[in-house]
Length: 196
Image 1: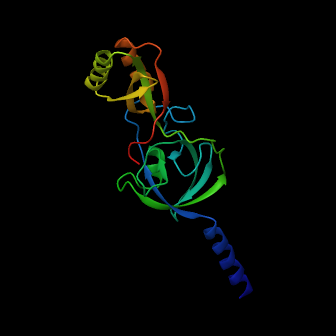
Image 2: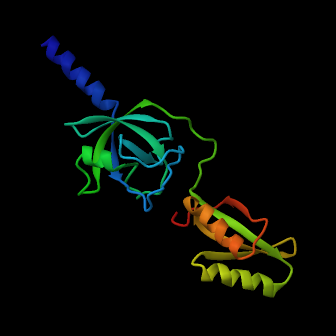
Image 3: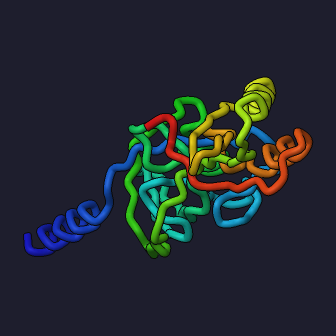
């Protein structure tokens, strides 16, 4: 009886230290995708993105039949019911490639470093500042014609024109496009998440 109680207590302690976490998976939209920790997206080992766990966190993830160690190496936008998005290898390991969602048991093995300010994953780019309304409007329309979201603000008596709601991974492409439009001295800054 004492032995059975001790085993049940150990099982209870093990289960209580793990949390049921909404888990999905993601595949980048381009082959050269680089994760938040600076590594290329890869399926050689099980990695994941999260907004609940900081980058460099090691997790023990289990579905009751299989347990894997998962390294958090990315931060991406995700549905509200998910805290982790596995890479393809992780999705295959837990059989969620077809369903896209499972509640998995998660326990933190080693917590990563919390950043002082979370990168929202979006930027806005100040493309130029003008005293002339017509020059500001020309750039505003050129940004809109390029498929980006333009914005303008009156700052110190001048009109600043922005490319807004740019996903961080597109920063270099947008800077190149603005350079091709003749913009010099562009300035990037954090942008609010347009989906929150």
